Length: 303
Length: 247
Ligand SMILES: Nc1ncnc2c1ncn2[C@@H]1O[C@H](COP(=O)(O)OP(=O)(O)OP(=O)(O)O)[C@@H](O)[C@H]1O
Ligand SMILES: [Mg+2]
Image (cartoon, rainbow over all chains, first blue to last red; front, side):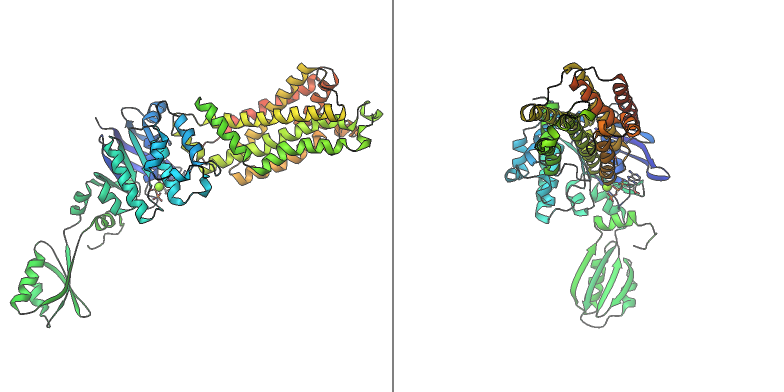
């Protein structure tokens, strides 16, 4: 049985349709990512899962329970980190931890959590005096303090420096190793590629794709770009005749050859046969970034 | 400790970390009473005040001051801020109902009000010979109704104000007429007849009169008690009907 089951979720704010017919399952122990542009409906989706928002249509099950009708059941097993900061200015770190720990019947040991999140020397600091990254880490600690079986994390690494982001990734992997299922909203492809087992891409309220990060990359065409500086003038017609080549463009002294399949070997081989050296040779292949942009760009762009 | 006890303790600490709230709600009323008590003319029995002294009248007025300050100013401001910042939503993701946070706010408020009531009554008695309430039960009933009416008014402000700015502004705007009719600038007993009648039908005017009557030894007037209960019900109903957890 999936841990989270979303079927045909629809949510409107007045006239505005924020989420429309979104369905996905999250399996036990999975890190499931939700990607999409600003305003796509990611927060709305995960807040419906957390039980914070009502839905207009569709069904949601969290460990078998409806997050609205059986809210108490879901609150006990799901820990949430909200996109917006959500603590009083003058509460100290330790007070917030103790308060949230008191909300649960069998809370985690907050000292251990604080240790793991590197907040030990900030315990007596007021929330308003914490740095952005420290606030985020506290939010993660509060999301985990009830020993949840599911953690919902909405843009938890936004505003973190690169080191803190990597630390947070390690932490999430540790949490998953403890058996916690993670629903993660993010804007960072690197984060999704590194952490997520599967990714849902939401665009304008609709599910645009649902696959593993590698699977998503392979859905954009496997076009590759080769860039080099020929050591001698090249007859481009020679290259254009190759089966793998789709286009050739000059960029100053460099040539840009796009193609598919074995294009690199073909181009290099042909040049060698003509006694030409490909200097400064570089190649780009599709990344999750390309896949994401292809899935969320509203114009039918040429790849 | 139970989760609600932790919540109340945390809210109490947060209240005490707001210097302006502490100054105006806890320090100011006893201080003003001491200052007024030091004016010799205010310690003279006056025929126009029904044989009472000005200082006697100011004990209930100071109680109204702290109640209006905390229930109608601090409370709605704090709740609006919690809503605006998403504190209520965040708590709603835990097994603790977010309504407990409102209850904890009310508990802290009432604690401050009771503390100041005790301070003011004690200072009046010890410093200036103001008699202790002669009808303690009536005094208690009147005080409870005052609390209900004012907390309901504060909750209504928190419920209808779209944001913290409006909430704070409404609290301030309400505070001055409330204190005027409580008699802060001119004790109700010294007001012209028409104004006095109007005052008796306002929440704070009915409140000072009910407390004053009970202090003097009679059961508070039913009209005043009914006025207070009526405001509590009306404001409370509006508050409950229009309260939002989300901004
Ligand atoms: N409370 C609300 N009332 C009205 N409209 C809302 C509300 N919350 C969100 N919306 C609208 O619904 C749409 C989806 O919002 P949502 O917050 O889910 O987007 P998101 O994908 O999380 O975006 P971001 O990446 O910027 O966080 C947006 O167009 C937003 O303006
Ligand atoms: Mg969002």
